[in-house]
Amino acid sequence: MAASHELDAFQVAAQYSSGALSPVEFTRACLERIDACEPRLNAMYRIDRDGALASAKTAEARWRAKKPRSPLDGVPVTIKENIYTRGDPAPIGTRANDDTAPQPADAPPAARLREAGCVILGKTTMPDFGMLSSGLSSIHGITRNPWNTNRNTSGSSSGAGAAAAAGYAPLHLGTDIGGSVRLPATHCGIFALKPSLGRVPVYPPFIGRVTGPMTRDVASSAALMNLLAKPDARDHMSLPFEEIDFLKGLEKNLNLKNLKIGFLPDMKVGLPVHAEVAAAAAAAAKALAAAGAIVEEMPSFLTVELLDGMCRFFEARSYNDYAALPPAKQAKVLPFIAEWSTWRAKNFTGRDVMAAYNAYIALRDVTVRSTQPYDFVISPTSPVLPYEAELPSPNNDPRNALPHIAFTVPYNMSEQPAASLNWTHSTDGLPIGMQIIGKRFDDLGVLRLSRALEQLRPAQKPWPQP
Image (cartoon, rainbow, N blue to C red; front, side, top):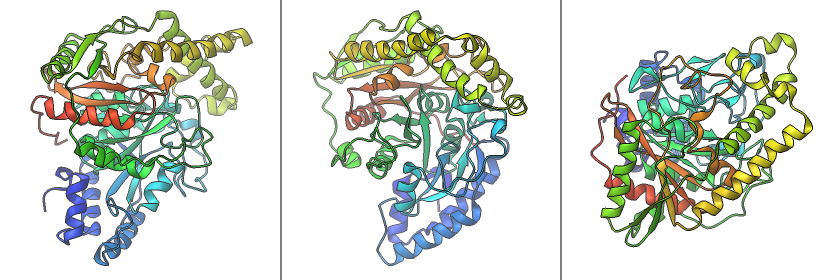
C-alpha cells in the first residue's frame, strides 16, 4: 500500500471497493501519520482513536457486503473544533472555555459525514473565537505550517489546513466567516471552497459563516460537497435542496473560450501585495487568457472605510461575547484577542454598532455589483506569504488585526462562493494560492474553474514531509 498521506479520497475508495485496502487498515495508517507529525505540527485538538477504528470496522463490513453508504464510506476525515460533534467539547479555540461540556449532537456538516459513513479521526485546532487568521490559540497553542514549521498556517481553520498539507487524512472540514478556509489553504498549499451561504447548513448560523471542504485536490472537495450540500432545518439560512452532482460536474471540462473573467490584482486596502504573490496572480491570469478566456483587469471595490466597518462589526460581535464572560474567564482569553475586541468596541454606542452593520450591507452591495459583469473573478487569496508561526497576525497589531483579509472577507458578506487553489511556491518554497470567485449560488462553476486552473498551473512541489 502507498503511504496513507499519498492517497486521495478516490484512490482510497477504489481500493476499498476492490478489496485491496480495508477501512480499518487505512484508518490505522492515518492515525500513525498523525502520531508521526504531532505534536510538532499541533494540528489536532482531539484524536478519537477508538471511535475512528470502530467506525472503520463497520464501514469495512459494508464494503465487503457491497453496500457502502456513500462513495466516501470509510474514508477518514478531520473536523474543525468549532463544528459540533456529539460527545466532544467545543471551546472555540479559547482557554476561557476550557470547562465547556461535550456537545449533545452533531452539527449539520458532521451529521452528514457520519451518515455517509466517513471515519471521523478527530477535531482540528483553531484560534480564540475563530477571530484570528493565525494558528495561535490560548487553549491549543501554536499550530505550525508543514511546509516550514517556523511559518504560520493562517486561520481560523489552522489545524485543518496543516492536517491536509501533512496528509493526516484525505478529507477535512473547516469554517469561514472572513477567509478562514481560504487563508489556511493559500498558506498551506491546499484547495478549499467557501460555499455560497446556506449551501452547506451550519449550526449555529451567523452572517457570513459557512462550512467548507479543505483537501489537497479539487475533486475531493467536490465529492465532499455532494455529502454536505443538503438542507437542515437547524440553519434558517439553509438553501432549498438542489439536484447538483458537484463531482460529475467536474468531469466535463469547463470551456474557457470567451469566458469573461475579472482579474483583481490589488485591493489597494489593507496590507500591500507581496511581489511574489503579485507575480503568481499575474501568471494565473495570463494562463487563463492563453487558454481562451477574456481576462479583464478590474479595479478595487473595497475602501478603507468599508474594511474598517467590517473590522468594527467583528469587534462589536466579539466584544459582546467577551463582555459576557466573568473576569476569571476573561483573563484566560488570548491577550491579543482581549485587546482587539475591547480597545474601541467597549465604547461603541448603538449608532456605532448600526454603522458597522451598515458597512456590512454596503460591502455586500458593492461586491455583488462589482463582480456582476464577469462570469468569474480571480485574485490573490492573501496579500502576504506565510508569516512567523508565533504571531497572531502578520502585522502583530491588535488595533489593526485584520488588514490581510481584504481579498477574502467581501465574499462572505456577499454570500458568493469563493475558493483558494495553490498556484505556485515562493523562492523560499512557501505556497502561493489564487482565489476563484463566482456568482451567488454558482458553487459548481467555482469548482469547475478551479479544476481548470488546477490543470493549467505549473508543476507543483512534492507535499511536505514534516
